[in-house]
Each structure stands twice: as C-alpha cells, then as structure tokens.
Image (cartoon, rainbow, N blue to C red; front, side, top):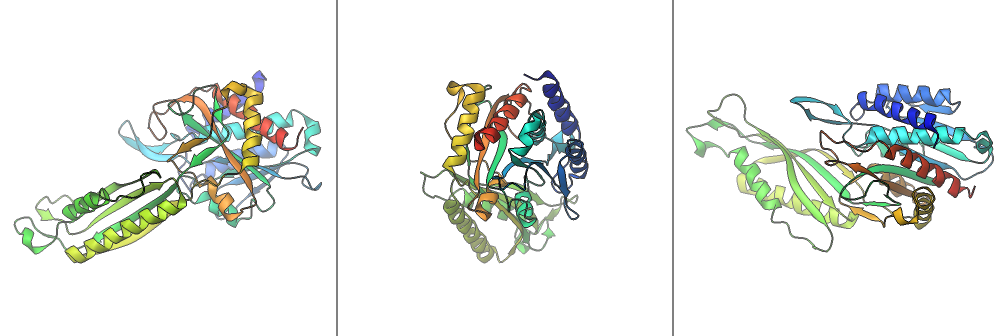
Length: 374
C-alpha cells in the first residue's frame, strides 16, 4: 500500500469532515476540491448557479468509453451537544476523500492518461434529493457510459473488510404541509379545531395504511410544530412533514396516493385547509448487471472473493439513481463499503474505521481498470 497516498486521503478526509456544509451551501467544499483537481492537472468545471465541481482525467478525444465516479458533498443539519450544526454523519466526507484517492492513484501511473477517460463528479445536495437532477440539467453525464458511486455501510449490514457491488436503494417521498385554521381561547375549545389534535389524527390514520407486505414500505410523521409562548391559546395552525419509503417506485406511488387521500379526509372532517408547501422524492435503484459485474470483480481483486457480499437491499434512498432514470443507457452501480460504521448513519456521533478509506479507493480504482480491461 502507498503510505503517502493513504496519508493524503486521510488528511483530505479530516479537512472535509471539519468543513461540513449543508445542501446547496457547499461553496467552501467546492472551492477546496476544485483546487485539488487543478493541482492534479485536470480539466475542471464549476457552475455559476450552484455548488459542485467536475474534473476530467485521461483522453476524452480518443472515443474511449467514459467512466464517471460520483461523490456527494453535503452534510446534514443536526443537533450535537445541544447545538445545531452541519455534520457529516452520512459519510459524504469519506466518499469525497475516496474519490479523490482514486484520481491520485490513477495519476501515479502516467501511462493510464491515454488509456482511460474518467469524469470525477462532486455533486451537491444529495440529502435534499436534488443534486443529481441538477447535474443532469448541467449535462454532466451526457457523455458518461459507466457511473460508479460509493457509500459507507453500517456495521450491521456490511462488515469491515467486506463490500457489496450494488446497493438496491428504495424510493422515498417527503411532504411538507401546513394545517391552516384559527386560534381560540384555552377556555373555549368548541370555537376551533385544535391543530395538535388534527396532527394526532393524521398520525393515527397513516398508521392504518395497509399495502402489499411483500414490498417493504413505511410512512411516518417526522416533524410537527404548533403553538407558541402563550399557553392559553388553542392553536388552529401547524406545520408538519411526512416521510414515505418503499422498495419500488410503484409502491411509493401507492403510498403517496393513500397519504393524499388522508389529507382530503381531514379537510372534509375538520373543515380546515391542509396546504402542501413542499415535496421531494428519490427514485428506487435501477439495476445494471454489467456495472455490477465490474464492481464485483473489483471487490474480489481487492479484498478477496470471500469478502464479496451479495446485493444489499435497503430502505434508504440516494439520488444517485436519478442519473439512470434520466439516462437509461447509463450503466451504473453503487459500491457498499464495510467500515465498522457505528452506531448508524445519520446518528450525530457516527464514526467508522478509517482504514476502510483505502479499501474504497482501491476497489473503485480496480473498477475503472476493469471497465477498460487493463
């Protein structure tokens, strides 16, 4: 193992970890990565209206198939030790460091520059489910034939020293809405409908949704705000959010239809308006056997055949899959990397074994070479 490369990857990870930025605000991250790509002599592209940076390594004039390697850039906004802040508890700092490590490993062999065409895609706003669509809008993957991603996996899913060649993510749908009614005096509950009680009714009704149990799915309220400092006011208005998950795109459509029907029932029952203020969604994974085969062999070459795990099916989502929905000819897969991640993704105290960083670098490096049969 190249000790200098490993140290460079770890140092880069630490810098990115300490410079966490939330979705659509990844400006420092963009500038930092841009500088690293330029120092490596790559053709670099940034955008006037959004964060994100693209680097091109190799020969794009020779008609070679183009391999894209994507890293997500954004952190989460969550409470840590009583203070809300940007926090890389989903591993995007590690993903960026590993993808940069692939570049630096390729650059150690100058002869590869004429044999490959690799596009490094550092994408904003994955946590919003919007960044991949923005990159598609920017024509980033128009010339890409193969696309590889990577995501750290919890210890309960994938053990340290092991990896899966494909993460079969499910679909997600998030709905933000307002209950719009009138306030009333605390002594006169007959003069309005309590928005808190309406919210509780919505929670009870979504708990009664029953769809095909053979397809994993869930729906739950994840945010609810009502009332203020005056505790003798019965709030008539509130804001809330609902998170839906399903393993297939068809099931998420059925789940959304049920939730919208509940909203309509609540409107009629309480004579209040439920105004949907925002929606966001992520599509379920589209599988490509050729890309999976390339990644599977890369894991076997790096970690050994015995450490190649089967396909990982997860209810989590990732906007990586918008690339293949928007460009069906794209051959894509996401590497699931074992790293002893504890206690779980999105936990404010998430940590993992940093030795796994080079496992990710070496696997994706081999995936690039295997694509070109080098």
